[in-house]
Each structure stands twice: as structure tokens, then as C-alpha cells.
Image (cartoon, rainbow, N blue to C red; front, side):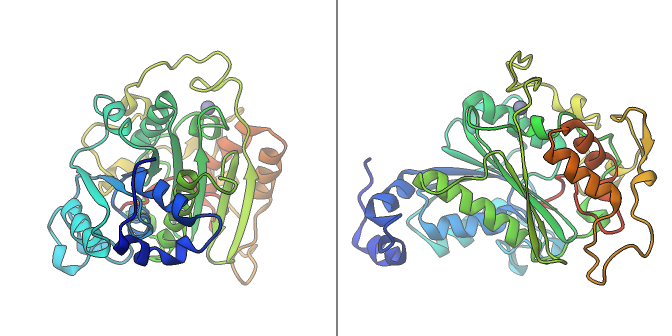
Amino acid sequence: MSAELTREEIARYSRHLIMPEVTIAGQRRLKDGSVLLVGAGGLGSPAALYLAAAGVGRIGILDFDVVDESNLQRQVLHDTNWIGKPKLESARSRLTALNPHVAIETHATALDSGNALRILANYDVVVDGTDNFETRYLTNDACYLLKKSNVYGSIFRFEGQASVFWPDRGPCYRCLYPEPPPPGLVPSCAEGGVLGILPCVVGGIQATEALKILLGIGEPLVGRLLLYDALAMSFDELKLRRDPKCPLCGENPTIHELQDYVAFCGIGRGEDADDESAFHGPSSCRHCTPPHSSGSLREPAGAGRASGATRCAASQALIAAMSSGVRRDATCAMQSGASLFRRPTFQLPICPAT
Ligand SMILES: [Zn+2]
């Protein structure tokens, strides 16, 4: 360990230092630590703010977007003065003002198979705040190949998910979602909307997990999928198992290097999450045997509780299936229909940044 704390840092982090789980030794670990945020949008905003405030010594942010007025309802890292300007510049300005003791490193690029390993290799922990499936699978695979912990989060409307994919300690994202959904099946936040404060909760959970990993304390969300429902104000947890047949982390892996994720996800190059044309497509599920239409999984009208949080029979079956290890059935239904429930219990990991 190398980083000594300055007098100013000791004053700044005093509420950390008095906790026996942190102390000066833990704060020095944070100062020595580094986190890469993939995306400076909805999830990346609270994560970046709290990681910087906590004193993580080096924070990398990867984004190539500019601040749009419609971002400001939830992307609290940015403000009105930065509309039309790069998110990375906004982020650097805000985070440096918040805590000048942390180094902010910006990567003005999309993550791709050509740069992912090089960029991710420079950080201890990766926080996945991506807004598309290509980058999500890419981040997962790169983290696994580099043996980096990958703190995952996703949001949609009133619901969120979080987990930690930590190579050799638990399952990876591919164990949970072996294949991306058919292009167009899952609505984006631009289509479906998102409660502005939702990413605060999920991004905050991601930042919490990143800090715990750096500090080496607590129980990380490894092998667990946390489900947050803002309408019901409830948290549920599903156990995740490593899939022995996972092509990445299974017993006979077939993925040993990064892939062509655009082809894998079946989405045309150049489409971004704000391009709604990227989200129009088939409404049947190609993973199920026999195939079914997403409509067959819809919750019957009027079946919800007053809170709107009642699970339909299909989603209850999903939980049972997933809990009992019938992973593919649960995954399949989650990918095909759950996000289309009138009151979704599950949703796909999409669209945190837009
Ligand atoms: Zn896996």
C-alpha cells in the first residue's frame, strides 16, 4: 500500500475513518483503488458522484455522448449548463469540484472488442452502466477474461436489477442471460420511460458494491440478483448459479477472446439507444420450446394489486423456475415477455444511460 492520506483527506473522510470496517487503512485502499464506469448516464451519475465523494483514487469514465436536455431528469452528474456538451467534460468538472483529491480519467470512445481489454485492464473494478446489449456482453466477457469484478445494474420504468459478476467466485452475465433478446423485443427507456430517481437507487447499489470490493468487506452481490421494485418499494433476491454450460465461464468454455458483439446481438452497427428503430422487431420468443408469443405472458388486465405490484402467474412461475435452477426457462421468459408485462416484475438489463 502506498497512498498516505493528507491532512485535508483525513478531515474530508473522517466519517469513514471512525468506522472500524474502514479506518485509515481502508481509506488508503480506496485511494489506491480504481473504478471504471462504463457510461456516464443514469447509473453512472450517482455511482460517479459517490465513488468520488468516497475517495476512490482513480475513476475512469467511458462515454462518447453529449448532454441532452432529456437526460437531466435523472442523470444528476450533469446540469443545464452542459446541454449539448460532452458528458465526459461535464463529469470531470462536477467530480473534480466535488473532490479534487481524486483523479478523473476520461475515455471518449465506445467500448469495442478492439479497445475493451486495454481500457479495462487499468482498473480494479468495472461498473456496468451500459445502455445496450452489445456493450453489456462485451463488458462481461472482457471482465471475465481479465478476472475483474463487474458490478452490474439495469433499470426500466420503476424497476431495477443489480448483481456482481466476479470471475471464479460466481456466475457471469452469460450464465444469467445466455443470449441477448431478439432485436426490438425490449423497449428502451426512450420508449418505455424511467422514473428519474430509479437510477439513483440502482447506481447507488453499484457504487456500494464497488466500495465493498475495494475495501474487502461485507458480502458482495455475487451469485445473487437483486430486484428492486419502486412502486411496491420492495427488494427481492434470486440466487444465481454458475452455468456449467456457459460458453465463457463454464466447464468447457468456447469463448477465449472477445467476439463480434454487434453480430451476436443482431443489431445493426451505428444504432444507439436513442434510435428507436433499434427496438422494433419480432414479438415472439425464439428461445422457448415450444416458441410462444410474448403476449401469452402478459398479466391479465385487472389482476394487479392496488399498488400495481402483484405478480402474474407467469412471473411467479419465473421466480419458482429460477429459484429451482430451471435457469433457461426463467431466462427465456424474462427475455421474451416479462418486460412486456403490464406491471413487469422482471425486466431486461437495458437502457440505464439514456
Ligand atoms: Zn458464465
